[in-house]
Amino acid sequence: MHIPLYHVNAFSNAPCGGNPAAVCLLDSWLDDSLLLKVAAENAVSATAFLVGQANGYEIRWFTPKCEVRLCGHATFASGYIVLHLLYPELNSVSFQTKHRGAVSVRKDGDFLLMDFPEVSTRRCTCEPPELRGALGIDTQAHAVLQGDNSFIAVFEDEDVIRNIQPNFERLEKLHPNVVMVTAPGEQVDFVSRYFAPGYGIPEDPVTGSAHCALAPYWAERLGKKQLHARQLSERGGELWCEISGDRVLLRGATVLTFKGQLHF
Image (cartoon, rainbow, N blue to C red; front, side, top):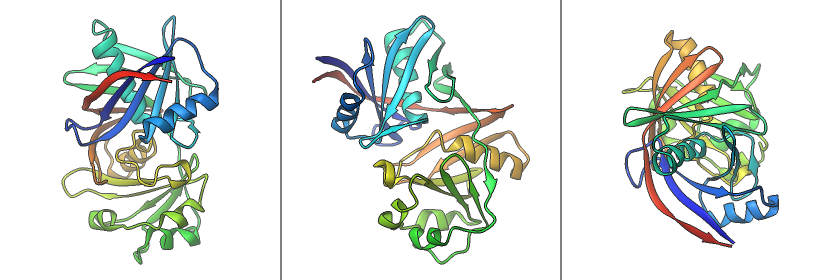
């Protein structure tokens, strides 16, 4: 079996920056166990599998450990493959998801722009007792939010986010919740990091879906609908976010790093 395979770095214009995603093109859906094996073989945080349909593609995402319900950077990477390599005459492409309806990616000058659903959050009445120890810090969070299997710890200093050295074993005990940390940025509107060891992703380099929750929070807090965000992982990446009704528009750069075939 030969599967067309691409690797793309999302939300960066550097070949060693952003979040690497794999994109696999399928004629029809394979058994889930085989999709998981392919994702594990790719050894990146997420692999997007695409099956063509009349008006776009069906899309599913797998980490090396499991299938996930929503993945921003691998969708972004998929949009790049379709719009720049497969059908460069197109300006936009739609992807049908299993759980979140249709999402889309379109060209936006030298960048791409992705249209994703907003993820609602609510304020936790008390900070989960395991959270601070799992993050390895003494600083009290300004607020802790919860939504869609995630905890979001909000701090007031970018350096706190940069210097967090999490205990991944302890973070994994919060599964199925992932953990995001965020603060106002010094040179951007807000910064963040994202930890999901229970899904096989100790720290995700740049997380598009996380900004579907982060951007609405900061938009309300800062009183603006357009925001510039930076994820402070080792690889790093930048996104430009816009709130549009109950949708979040995410804009950024992409870099193709590999194309070939997987023999399976």
